[in-house]
Length: 133
Length: 133
Image 1 (cartoon, each protein chain N blue to C red):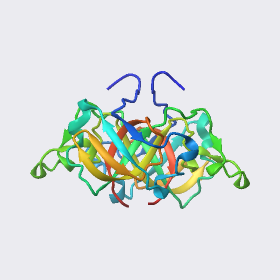
Image 2 (tube, rainbow over the protein chains, first blue to last red; image 1 turned 60 degrees about the horizontal axis):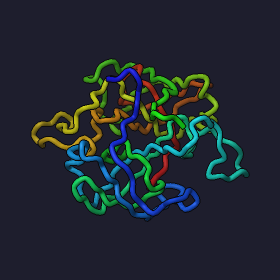
Image 3 (cartoon, rainbow over the protein chains, first blue to last red; image 1 turned 120 degrees about the horizontal axis):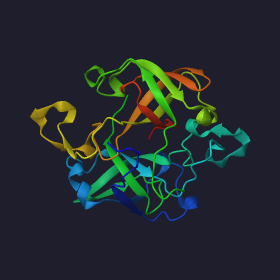
């Protein structure tokens, strides 16, 4: 355990989404593909992930503002301001995004995925098995 | 933006799950209730969350080991070791848990929820709207 809760980056995203206005609003509306590069020291944590499955991926949105608590959902001002915790806005005190991505292929420490709604070069902080309720 | 990616705790969980062997294996198997206390400086981020909805809650598992990459899923040794990123194990480089919880009531900065699989006194780091694929 650490004194300070510091996030460790386990990898980085490579994809062709280079600007926010080219990013799908969320994973459920995206078929964009890319590669999750997991750093070599974390590679064995991937054992058991196979092509065809859906994985839950957590990204650290290092370009996002952390000091905003109210937003216009999806930028739509007609619906009024809402608390960030009632939304999926990338703007929030801890700028963590959750995407559910389909694994297209596994090549060692690189996972080819589809469903991306995240900017190229964004750090990856976790991958989990998807479960339902 | 910060130089170091440090997580800020936005609140803390109160519930009667005091020991790991009393915790449900995950939220989809739990009807345990408790309270999410959000610290006052983050309260307005809750605006728009209402009773009856399902929210996605991220916890920082401050008691979890961070230096393990292989586990026996659910402690079952018959199935062999698996990479932590192919599981929902609390043991992982960034000890973040994701729970989908039902909001039973909202009282200012306190949310009564059901579906808990997390220990009492665990820090909360984010809340999001649930979306489907």
